[in-house]
Image (cartoon, rainbow, N blue to C red; front, top):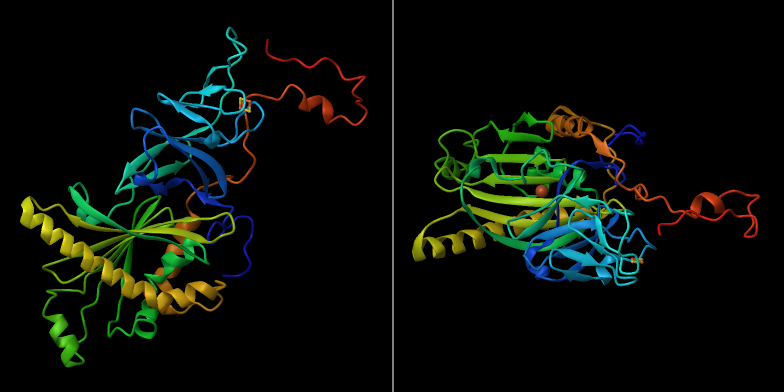
Length: 362
Ligand code: FES
Ligand SMILES: [Fe+2]
């Protein structure tokens, strides 16, 4: 791809596609605790109320800008440490200790939050329009999961997502004797699925042996959400393995990632032991694939100047990303409470003596 224009979204840290992004592990946020979070380049406070519910708000108090993560959780609300103003989970100021009776209601922007797979997810946008990313084969099923390590890679999530649909690199980087033909299906505005349509070639004793485990095409399915989080399903017909790569872009265009290993829930002690073994196996497979790609992610400067026919799935993915609306996410927080002083200090002729009395809440 040539140098980006303002209209391009792909591989641009400042263009955030509206959607769900992982924020932090559920276990990292106990009841009554707060956490500061740089989320997609924006400063947030995340806290867990005493009722167990997680809340995400813009980080800076609309009074004087203290970071709310320094504050204290009270019930389902948070109180700023600086002058003790208190905010509800909806971001509404519900108490100003030195101003008990007032119509003056400062607000701070809240962000939709949910928890799934042991992670806290935040919707970048006003109202969620999509579910949390999932493996299509497990849709609607109860799942067991295990979290892998979180990681940071030096390239944008859009570029990392490409890796799993880059058919050529399976031969060169991963040395696998497969020829993938990935057919795209656009599920909705934010989700695209790629499915392999080719069988394993009977070119050696190894591939002939592998081919016995697949009635039709080799199972290899990717579903991509918001251009940044993807699920992978692989494995023989009798046993499929599922991995979700939850990625989000950092302010400087790197990928902050978290892997999730998934399997359908199995009942009883035997089911529990089987799932534990399956999830360990899934983790080992994920590590194998990640290892080969790590070197590439460290140094790549993505510049897709010479596409060939084998790159067609990548082109389809980029087109899908470009069609998704991006938010002006990194812009300064707009507040619904204009500062009563700012309007005056911006005027060049104004001096402290000539400044009119500011309007302040009483
Ligand atoms: S800065 Fe938060 S209450 Fe004053
Ligand atoms: Fe790879």
